[in-house]
Length: 79
Image 1 (cartoon, rainbow, N blue to C red):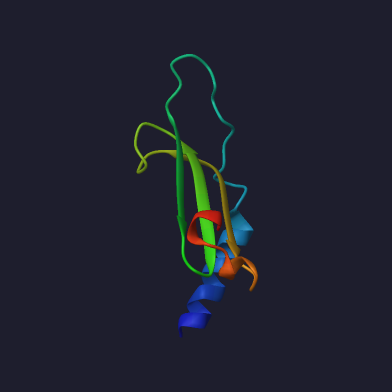
Image 2: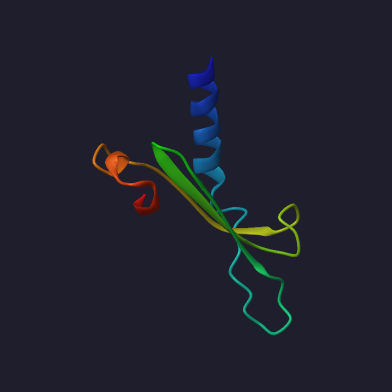
């Protein structure tokens, strides 16, 4: 069940990944740019958005990736 749910979410994100993204507004008085990231022992991900709060911010870009076996052996501060 969990694998099927993951595959469905992955498919939905892939299909709609360009629909909700916007360009960075660098004009004077523009809302702040937010960088959110998280990592585990096996992978990392990040999200770039712009808006007054994370709840209302517009998506700019996101990334996620799995560490290969060599990267999983790096010290925590090098991952």
